[in-house]
Image (cartoon, rainbow, N blue to C red; front, side, top):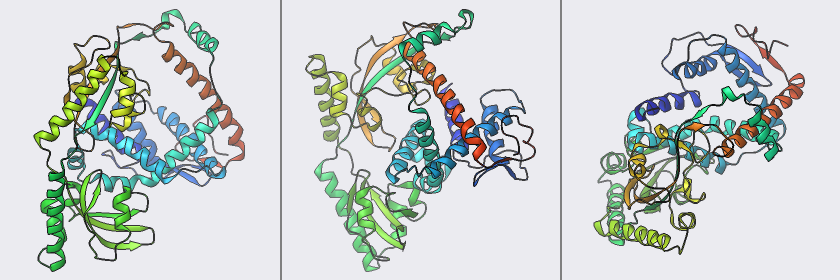
Length: 447
């Protein structure tokens, strides 16, 4: 899939994943099914069907039954997650949303481009989608509980491979594995002081009545999403914001303006608009320090020294990534970049970011790029080095080259069986009602 097609698909998938309305023929919405106290709307089934069609599939009305059946299983999992008192913490919700939004934002190139396309800030998206994301995590947690005891031994993997007819063995495309070390540019003290002084000046002007907070936010805030709304974030829950920002915001009285607050995003002043228990609505002005040539050179020099240590075998690339990399996604995996489509470290050529592919296309295995500029999903300037870990040629699926793939496939098969067995066990004791026009679907009929 090309980058432009991928971006278009991700835009569509973002709407579908979170149940947002998309452009399609309008229908009179009605309840397609009820599972326990949870309902599934006909529009939700139709939206998932549009995803199916958007992937190049032919129209098959019977696919809607398969879609509904999967949605019923998810609601069944959610229903029993609540019964079993499975908990998802606020931090898990925030971390999960952060990872997903980071992935989508990377496809657009920056937070600003993402927000410009939707006309809505990431913070607004997060607030709107948080309850839905929590339900998704509860559903996944229940499924994990059902499937976690399942495992596969080498014998199972071998048997899975042998059971595939020889003439059905798929052709595996060329794939690449790569690692990276990312270092964000650190701002110099002079640039930080300049930001603080500007914000202090804005604060004094607002307090004295010389200037309006919203007007200054529109003119100067680096958070373009909230700047369009006079710096206002809308109501957020305790735990939704980064700790430094939240600690300062919850101390404020109505209309009070905070001193300058530093977070990983930059420097802020915050004004409390309204508080409702553990919810607050605030506006803020964000300034980011100006990066100097000296800041850039210092970051490049640091990465160069790290690469030099790797070349001298003083430290492995994986160890260096864990010790030095600022990339939250690959830091803990020793710099290995995970393909979100497959959950593995292998990428087909057309799945890799175009810039990354250009950097590693001519590398030999285990060779490392020079230090190159990089923009993070948060829009920060950084530098990185990339190592080509593995490159495979197109080949027919086999035990030698594709053991990990076969292991994952065998495990998935066993996990699906475990889930199906659980559904058969729980279905009779759970209220499930399927309504017209889906009551002819074979798996879940009206009780």
